Image 1 (cartoon, rainbow, N blue to C red):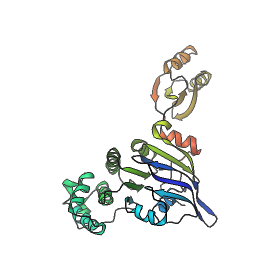
Image 2: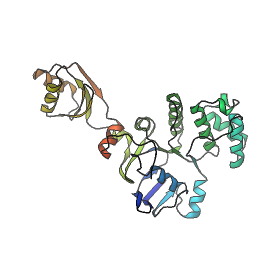
Image 3: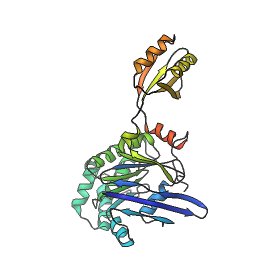
Amino acid sequence: MAVIETRDLTKRYGDTLAVDDLSIRVEEGQVFGFLGPNGSGKTTTIGMLLGILTPTSGTFSLLGGEGRRELVEARQRVGATLEQPNFYPYLTGRQNLRLVARVKGVGEEAVARSLERVGLAARAGDRFKEYSLGMKQRLALAGTLLSDPELLILDEPTNGLDPEGMREIRRLVRRLGEDGTTIFLSSHLLWEVERVCTHVAILREGRVVLESAVDELTAGAARVAVSAPDAEALEAGIDAHPAARVVDREGALLIAELEDEDPAALNRHLAERGVHVSRLEPRKKSLEDVFHETTGSSEEPGMEEVA
């Protein structure tokens, strides 16, 4: 079942085309990463899905609902975090969550269950102002989980967090995905998306340029990191190998892609040419590699959206 499906979804702001004929499909149970360079339209797309923005053209469905009334009903089954957590600092985590529960019309059992799911049950009696950044973000996620949503939409859930906070949210998202919750995650952190997402769509200038399972994107030709005292001879030797090509550089290391997935053959080839390798190690193709190859960008996806 398609939990999110967009068909030629488009949003214009005057002469600015923020989202251009966007078509994606998110299936039930997927943890779907939504990536793109700065200004590619990620936040605008989420705004349309949540009813905050009105599409210029195109259609989309949420949880099988497509008409206006159906979308209103479907959004009641969606949990979303869009901004930094905003709770009362002098109330405890449990007290803050009880206020949210009252608005959502759920009881104490839902509060206890949500605190347990995000790993805050033991700290629920602590005041919000005493929480770490990661704990505050986890409490915000607990709020979205109160009504047991079928779909979670998370827009930059680790933005502004320290490394420990990022790890906390990453573990939580992974655990929620393993429990079967469908998650739509927008993030500028490629390595984070690669660690937690099962599927991904990459945007450029409002259009999807690639959509696939993460495992399929990072599969393919083997890669190795190679170094040698004579860097010029090393590069010439790799270029002369029929099944290898240099695809990147990391300081003194050359990253080579091997069509035959045989690093030993490359090592023998270099030795026969008098190139003595000092380091040769396997490298898995990363989502960052795919992103740069697909978008032609040398920069990471941006921290903020301008469209």
